[in-house]
Length: 221
Image 1: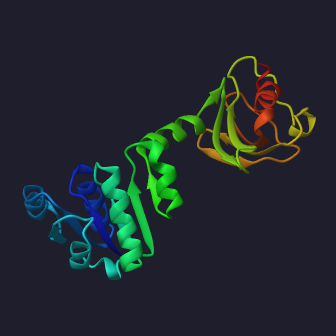
Image 2 (image 1 turned 90 degrees about the horizontal axis):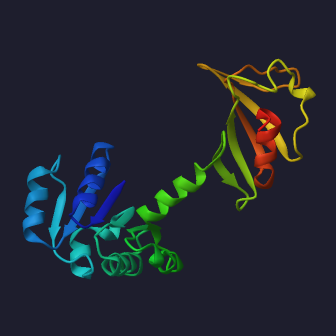
Image 3 (image 1 turned 120 degrees about the vertical axis):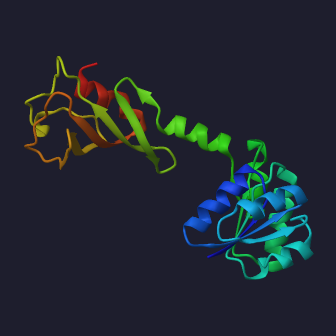
């Protein structure tokens, strides 16, 4: 792919290096001459670097946005990122415009304009939410607008209430399906005659409202 990156800071530099190392062609637009010069000296494979304002149509044209597959605006200014992405979409018809959003409150504006907004703050908060725990239960992913979840529960190594019991003997909450067990380095699918051992990590598909009940059924807590 051919990708144009607007910005020359640490985020842009890292992004460009990663894309280049993955075999993509990259051009950068940076309005600070000294930063552009540093990029030119340090970047691998000497990508095209345009010294200018990424919000200016002429500099985007010089960077080849007209035949780019992706335009990524990753400056530290949300206004610049928004304007440059809009310009890339409207003036050059770039198929995909991606923007770094420094203030999460601005995300809805970018999304409303068809620009993919990426906020590190939002990403971190989602990771925290999706990796949230209830005792020994960990939510790996949420599905169907947050109504269903894929979770894993580690069985206690002492006082294991389900150890040596078959899955068919358990009284699980409705909307809960056990589908895998991780035991040491081994992972196995779950059947009705599957039995548990202390320390097993049980993976299940469940409704979010029954996560706590599932934990109780498997751990007794």
